[in-house]
Amino acid sequence: MYYVTFSSQSRIRDSHNVGSTSNLKQRLKEHNEGRSPHTAKFRPWVLVAYFAFANEKTAIFFEKSLKSGSDRAFVNRHFI
Image (cartoon, rainbow, N blue to C red; front, side, top):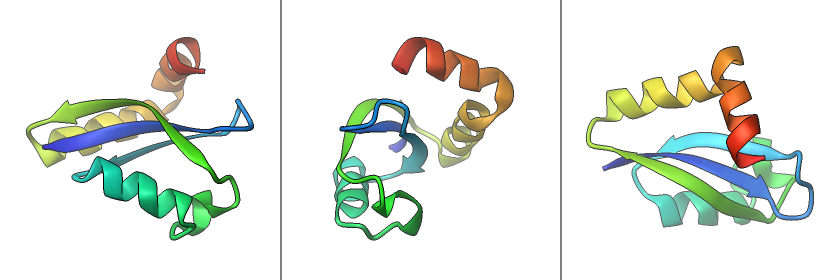
């Protein structure tokens, strides 16, 4: 399975991250250990939601969609 994740910085409500992975627990652990330069300064992260896909290509397409302007409004409405 491939997952698109939505994580939130636990102390600052406006700080969030959308990403994709095939290992949810490992990816969250990497973010919280500071292994990702982009997310290290906003630790700790909590997983808010994830979407599971059987196909990696579909997961990546959905991740890019959530990061685009039109679907960013969907994220803001339902997860922030």
